[in-house]
Image (cartoon, rainbow, N blue to C red; front, side, top):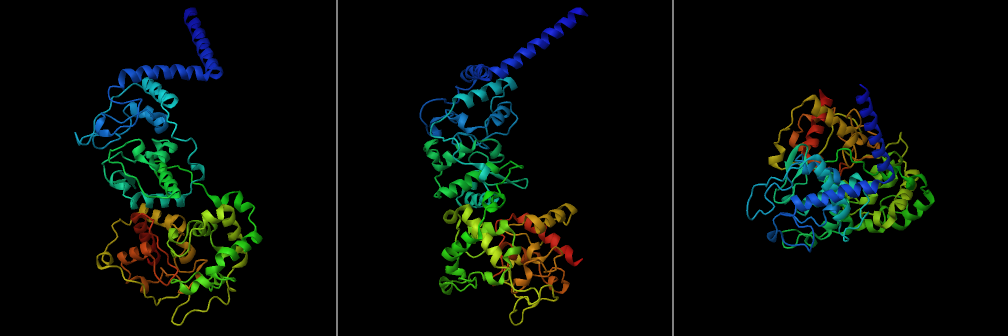
Length: 474
């Protein structure tokens, strides 16, 4: 019993001494682990991978070059990958000219995996990869949406698979981007995207023709993949809006906005005569009731980004966040719509918000889409998700702002809209609207109305909203 007690004391003292050493000399212990990692790399990795020298074509290699592996991979992911806990990087063989089947990677112990990952982080760095090249703490959800558009428009999805609501889409020619945000370091992705052949020459890598902003958007988007708790930056909650100035905003409106929207917001600026659709008439809009995040996205990223007129430029690079905050403060303070009792002078033949039936002519969807039936079951889960998008998450603007929480077309924006929003509670109107027609209008918008295009929304989320909208007439 005495001996066991002595062993316990000795074990405790050794653990305590190890803890003190780690606190006082963390770099020494890390270096020891990294040195062990170097031995493991030399023993287990160099037979396939290169760890020094210039980049070569994949057709001259056995496996990917790793001389910049510390820049490229996150330590936690690499540790798990080396233990066989992550899926293969290449869904085809890295040397796809030799085989179409993925090659199994060597599986190591947890301790060896940690040592190698630490060695990577300490030693395998490339001076071309600049630390802090992209600050994800200031990356917005709208920028991720724009990045996804670039990713698809520039054919990235032809080679890289992504996950969309549990379904994998895209090609398998190159590395899978499912969970890419948990695998790569952002500075590596940014530098690689700027010119892939620098790291993989003559290997089929594609150089996309995008601006610096576009490079930022698509890189940030890739870094959100698989990161379910990614925290998007919300500039309308930042210091810019806390110190926004209506006086500065008034000057900005005069210098930039009035050329289209007019000096008093009547939509009669000198540029308006040539435009169709015409600029928004701010004087008839209750902009004080518009969600600030929506106004920010319209002004900063432009009309096209939010499904509105492509004639509305993206002013963010010109005005910067503070200028956008200032002009929003001025617009909210100035344009509060006509008196509620007067409402709006409605065009002949138009109806009031919420009336039933509604006289409305909207573009008819193409025949194959017009006949579509909702592919999703009206389950409680799907309807609940549809409600979430209708009331909160639909971008560029949640449906409730126009159609109302009850779907009756009496949202806070409705009284300034000509024609007024659709009344989803009106059975006599809704009975003739097919699922396909509703999908088409939501996806593409409705010309000559305030219904903008929700073309960045996933199809299944639109179908879920339609399931929820159908509940209003039951």
